[in-house]
Amino acid sequence: GQNIDQPTEMTATEGAIVQINCTYQTSGFNGLFWYQQHAGEAPTFLSYNVLDGLEEKGRFSSFLSRSKGYSYLLLKELQMKDSASYLCAVVDSNYQLIWGAGTKLIIKP
Amino acid sequence: SAVISQKPSRDICQRGTSLTIQCQVDSQVTMMFWYRQQPGQSLTLIATANQGSEATYESGFVIDKFPISRPNLTFSTLTVSNMSPEDSSIYLCSVAGGEYQPQHFGDGTRLSIL
Image 1: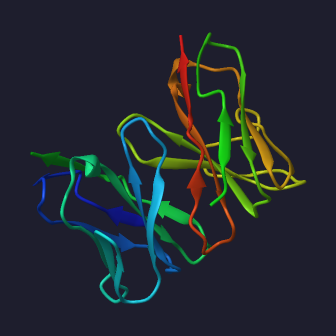
Image 2 (image 1 turned 90 degrees about the vertical axis):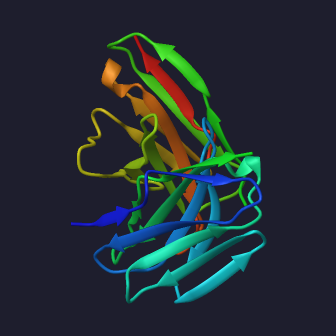
């Protein structure tokens, strides 16, 4: 079966750095997306990784290791507005998007 | 990215009735999808809306319950038929420019069935 694992919830402090991990076992791999979803709102696209390595976009970076079936989203200089759920999603060999359950990130002052 | 308008934003319906949700995009898009999201849970794909042909449904979802139309490349509807309280959820449409392109979401329809 296809499976994506993320921690259910994480807590971090404003101004700090947090890493949200995502491991996947899917039938094939054609890329991995990270989305942010604030409570009561729709998901918004953050990043896309298809090759191994780190992609940096401002305060957010995303890393991929295809051999390990592993990705992480790194958030720096945390702000209160970063409190949200972060969803990992993998494109499988049939170009289906397999969604993780999401990680709820709580930022404390 | 495309501007996606989804209507209605919320509704409260009686069991046994049906509701049609509309998704309008301000530009032509290759792919359109319909999702359901229960509170505190991740997204569940209902179907891929195909322009000019029948939608492609995921396991557990059937056309009689969730008929979908997509008459052109900018518009789609999802109908939730013969609703029961178990259908209470957030329904989201999303669009993408292709298989490797990120999906962008409408604001969602919050549906409650009494």
